[in-house]
Image 1 (cartoon, rainbow, N blue to C red):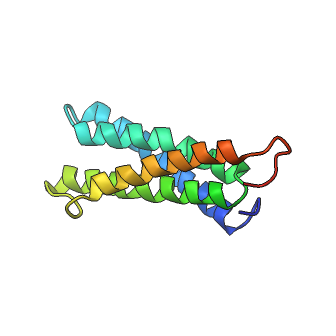
Image 2: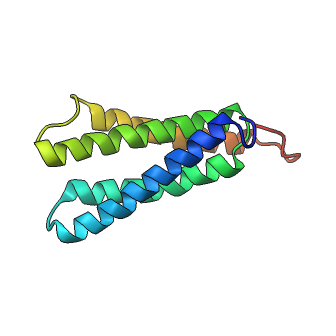
Image 3: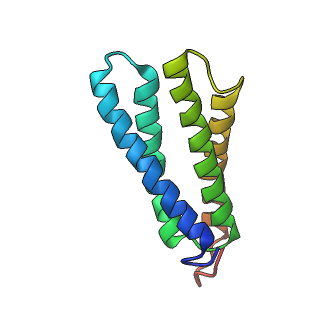
Length: 125
C-alpha cells in the first residue's frame, strides 16, 4: 500500500465515516434508553475508527492493507447488521454480525502479524 495511495484514501474515508457513526450512535444510545445495539455500534465504531485512521495515515505495504480491509469491512458488516436489527427487528442476513466480528478479529490478527514481520529497518510490510 503506497503512502497516499488509493487504499490509504479509502481507509481514511472509512475512518471518518466509522468515527462519525460512532459519535452519532453514542449520542443516540444516551437518549434511547436500554438499547444494547446502539451502544455496541458506538463502541465498535469508536474503537475501530482510530485504528482505520492510523492504518490510513501510517500503514504501508500489503499486510497492513489487508488488515485495514478486514477491519473496515468487518466493522461495516457488524454495524450494519446491528443497525438493521435495531430498527427492523431482524438482522441483515443470518450470521452477518458474527461474520463481521470475525473480519474485525482477523484484521487485528493481521495487524499483529505485521508487527512481527516489520524489520528493524522499517521496511514496508
